[in-house]
Each structure stands twice: as structure tokens, then as C-alpha cells.
Amino acid sequence: MENKRKIAFHTLGCKLNFSETSSISRQFGAEEFEQVGFKDRADIYVINSCTVTKNAEKTCKALIRKAMKTNPEAHVAVIGCFSQINPEELKAIEGVDVVLGNADKFNLFEHIKGLDNSRNPKANPDVLVHEPEVFVPSWSADDRTRSFFKIQDGCDYFCSYCTIPLARGHSRSNTIAATLETARNIAQTNMKEVVLTGVNIGDFGKLNNETFYDFLKELVKIEDIERIRISSVEPDLLHDEIIELVASEPKLMPHFHIPLQSGSDTVLKAMGRHYDTAVFASRVKKIRSLMPHACIAADLIVGFPAETDELFEESMRFIETLDVSYIHVFTYSERENTRAMKIEGKVLPAIRHHRSRQMQQLSDQKKHEFYLKNKGQKILVLWEKDNTQGYMHGFTDNYIKVKTIFNAELINQIQEVTLNHLDADGVYLI
Image (cartoon, rainbow, N blue to C red):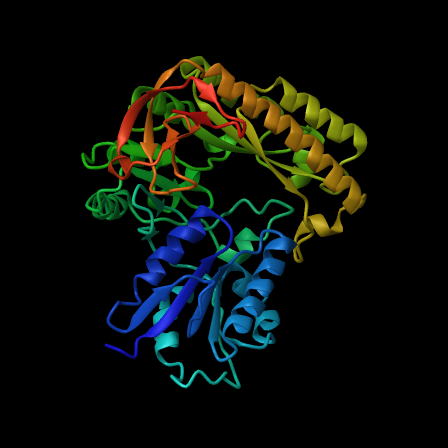
């Protein structure tokens, strides 16, 4: 078919978004559409958006302008969280013809199919934003080595700074049986690793009287899945039985991502979090007692309203005592319709960014120490498909990045290596 329309996808935000973009893109069959890179000239540009921070929204709008500059006659569709929270703002941007929220984005194909082949911009963009209520499974198939597997969506926590419950709705998931069936489909693709994703995956199964732990026990029984990596789990939902299962089951990678958000109990309370620093420290201690080599990552927000200099220092001191491997540092960003907007004691942007740099330095130090602790270890690595200046990269089971001379035969292969030489970029050279 010579007159195929060219379509390009771009994903902003989390691994969950990546899994959904991949599933949505597979609706656009090769007979009618040719998928191209977002930098290429396309007839249709699709942006799966994020609204966690103001910067994410700015990036989305910049991508719209970039697409229209590449092809002024193109159609642009914006889907996902930004569309859910602020559809009118997107609708008003020149070039945007389709705005679909999180409940409607999985019907993108029907809207794109109806767009005029002449590529004349629509006078009235399609805007559909309904409350997300139904769980729609998805998984990524763009990578030859790993798949981001969405097992849960939405959140019932309503932390004071967060818009995600507004954007994605209440916590929901499929049954264990249905989720395992999707996992078996992923297993047939020959990808070696599955990364479990969601908004709050520790909440999996709540509406079905099932648990995340019960799901994991069944998932490891699928023979063709060799590696299972768990993404972010809330501290209050990371129960001992889950940690013990990861420690005893070879398929479950010794890699934990635990949102901390602050090392000050005063700030945690203002954030509306469901734990205190003692609970978080106990989770880290439990993991280290069973898996000394495990990678433990933490999320942290700096510059939250009423985070005084003293409370920030308290947070720094707490994190210094934690045996975590690295920290994802986020600078607080005001979000409309959140309780945090009403909290007094706003932190100046310059101070927020200064604190972010301080915390990032601490994270870099901890990551370097974690890498050094693993020096000399024999460990399994899954090689990826990239070829960067003659090198390919991979990750160990405990998420240490390594590289070696590119060899196509190693792609999607698990190989035992010895960690000996750290290069100037802090990556182990094999």
C-alpha cells in the first residue's frame, strides 16, 4: 500500500506510560500506517503526556510546536494525564486535533482513522475526557530485551502534592488469572525480562480480594519469563513476605524502588504519606538482612511547602544513615487542585533547586559506593540492543550498569560477568 500514512509516537513520564504507548501503537497496523521517529516528518504525531510536574507539561507543549514545525500540515493527538487534567489548555494549541484522557486514549485508532487525509487542521478538535474506571492491561514490545508490563492503575492515596489520582482514577487491576494470561502472551515474545509497572502496584488485587504477593507467587511459575523486576512499591505495602519472596526466588531481581519523598516525619505528615521514617528504615534493614547486594532506590521530593532549612537538614541526615543505592530527586512543583497548594511557607524556587543539587550529590555518592561494593563480584547481566560508539550496555540483576564491545550475538542474552573496571562515566567495563 503506497499511500500509507506516517505516524510518530512520543512518550513522556513513567514506565507505565511507555507500556501504554506501546500497546496503543500496535493498533496501527503496517497495512495502513508506517511508524516513524518523532523527529521525522509524519502525517500524525501522538504524544502520551505527563502531568506530574510543570516541566512535564512544558515539554509536552514544546513537542507539539516541534511537530508542527517539522510538518505544518500534520495532525497532533495528545493523550494521557495532561489531557485528563487540562484538556482545554491543549485544545487551544494550534495544530492539536485530538485530546484524549486516560479513559479514552485506548480508542485513539478510531479518532486517527477519522482524520482527513488532506491533513487540514480540524476547526473543532476531538476532546474526550471521562473518569478512568476500567482497568486496561498493556505491555511494551518495542525493546528486544525487556517489557514494561502494566499490572495496576490509579491510586487511592491522595497525597497532598499529587495529581495522579485525579488523572488516573481509583486503584484497580485485573484478577490474578487474567494478569497471568497477559504475562504468558509477553513470554511468547522471547524478551528475557518483565518489569512490573503501575501507579501503586503494591495495591494490586485490592478490589478482587487478592494480593500482590499472591500474584508474584504465581508469576514466577511461568517458565518462559526468566527475569522479573518490580518497580516502585510504597513502604507500607512492601510487606516482609514480598521481601522474603524476592530473596528466595531467583527470577525476582534483587532491586527495590521505594518512594520515601522526605526524610522528615514533619514533612511526611504534611504530604499525607502513609508511613514515617522508622517504617521506611525498617524496610531497608529487612532487605539488607536478606540481600546485602540488592539495589535499593528511593524517590525524594525537595522544596515541599513548609520544608524549612532545619527540616531539609533533618531529611539529609536521615538519608545519609540509610543504606540505599541511589535516590531519584524531584524538585517540588505546584500542582493545581492539590492540598499542598494551600500549605503556607512556600520555598523559593532558587532554594528548591539548591536543595535538589545537594540531594543529587548525596545520591551520586551513594551510587558510587554501591557500585564499589560490588567490585570483583561475578554476576549475571542482560545485554541490550543499543550500539553507542561501538559499545553495548546491560544491567545486572541488582541494576548495575555495565558495557562491553558491541556484539550482536549478545543482544537479549544473559551472561555471567565479573565486575572489575569502572570507567570514567561510572559504568563497569567488561
